[in-house]
Length: 330
Image (cartoon, rainbow, N blue to C red; front, side):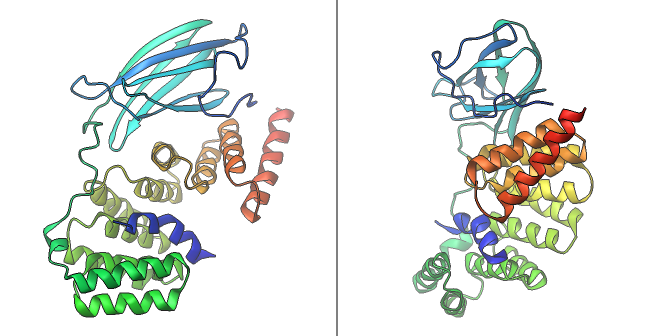
């Protein structure tokens, strides 16, 4: 089970108080009529140079939960039914973000957010080919691709054999070393996984995925400060991957620094786009650390919406019941 978890986490990268509504911000005008406690919010997200920022995740968080939507081609977004009161609006794209706290009154409000940091155009996606990758011979690359395919089928022994063949053809093959690291980490061998990821970085200092796996291996060994430094180094090369932000959230959470974990996990959730529901349970743990029981309940419900069956779902349902009982008592 642990191996499957880490494959879900990293394999995609190795390919070239009461909650009234927890759904994302995709309401249509006819869905419900606005009442005296509701407001609407519309706005636009701009890049650092003033251009419209398309496909940027926008989140609105308040006392009654969190809603999320994505900007259109003109950088515009809209939430039709938000609760009145203080709301925090955040737009995030990779390492660029913007945040504003506003007071929503009944009716419609309009804001403009400007991203700080790298451009939201996606030019720095981390998908460029390094000089080291260009040196990889075709034979090694072919063996590596077959290893990825075998691992996706959970044919572990066959995958390991193909990795060995790839490394025999090119010993300093960063991608093959990184895949081996992922497999060792999934099997509970954190120290060998860290060693292999470090070898991958030695072979290719711009191998972002190797930094991310090394950060996860450090987390697995309780070396959370090392994980934070390593993950931030890798983010420089691939800022739009969700995995490093998830691992950063776990690092800060383990260090009992929930206030720092929460924005990292929120960014991971926005970038993952519902592809990894366990982010919500980790975010719920962080919110519980700061005694935000309403927010924790909302995250658990989001998890259950995405993954309603299984042992993790059973635990989430139990915790939701406990939180609801506590909130009702208060």
